[in-house]
Amino acid sequence: SAGGPRGHRVSRPSLGPRGTRSISLSAATVVNSAPAPVQPYLRLMRLDKPIGTWLLYLPSTWSIALAADPGCLPHLDVLTLFGVGALLMRGAGCTINDMWDKDFDRKVSRTASRPIASGQISQMQALVFLGGQLSLALGVLLCLNYYSIALGAASLCLVVSYPLMKRITYWPQFVLGLTFNWGALLGWSAVKGFCDWSVCLPLYFSGVMWTLIYDTIYAHQDKDDDIKIGVKSTALRFSEQTKPWLSGFAVAMLSGLVAAGVNAEQTLPYYAVLSAVATHLTHQIYTLDINKPEDCWKKFSSNRNLGLLLLLGIVAGNLWKERRETLQPNEEAVSSEQNP
Image (cartoon, rainbow, N blue to C red; front, side, top):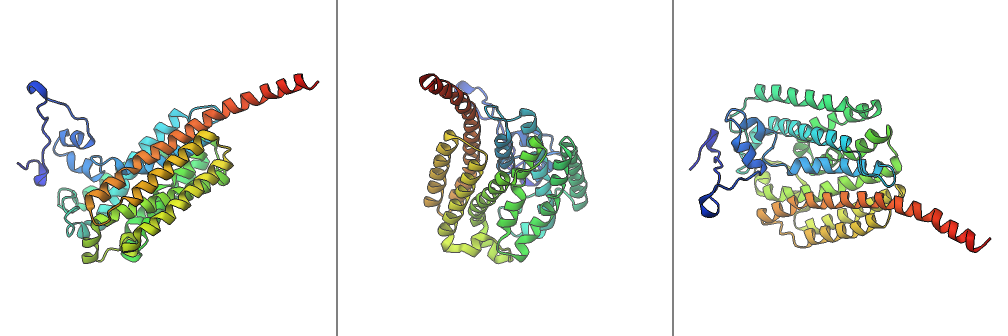
């Protein structure tokens, strides 16, 4: 039975073995357990669908981990700040998107129940809520150094303009890539106080290519509705040629990651994980069925694990640096003893 505002299904604890209630801690369950007046705002932030927050957060974690000193783990305090920032900025981005797209959303079955489109939240309420999210995000940004504050502020024009791109170009996913991967620049500067462009630019480029892959897959879910309402996307641009395009983006992404790794003096574990990332991308693209929305969602969502895998490779490669650098003096000492 439908319950809650505007027919949203209320999540009830399911009965587990022997009649005990099993507790689910999924994001959707947490949102459904919140007070009813708060739920539309949490859904507006997409707190019930955290995959977007992960995809925004992960490029910054790669950059933070690459910037760590040799043999050291990435700074936990910086990772935490960026995690909070990603949550707030993804929420703000979704709020802006839904404010722009309310009329489109009403015409698409998948988005018709969004809080603004369905009338649960007014435009003014959304605007006030947006101001609150951006104020909190500014508080996070002000915890960083001056270079990073300026760099972070520069991304706001992308955040605001992205939702308009689907009206004017078949490449809105490219603009989303520029927006979602800003953390690849900001993470390094937050740690170092500047950007090493020889590392940050290839990493940023790879992130943009990654976004073109996963968001093109995502856009195939809505392509029929998009045609009807006049919204553009790379899914419509590529159509049946999607897989060759995605394969090209995957090659470009991996090339950028190799370049970033070389310039950051990464080590064997990093490149070993890159081969696993390449395998993941190959499987994702090869087995994709662009005409099955459920398969598109499955492949899209799998990119969180791909991003985490890459983070693991960066951290392991950085820890390996200490081993390599401590072995070298020992090898030199042995060599000098053998050759006095």
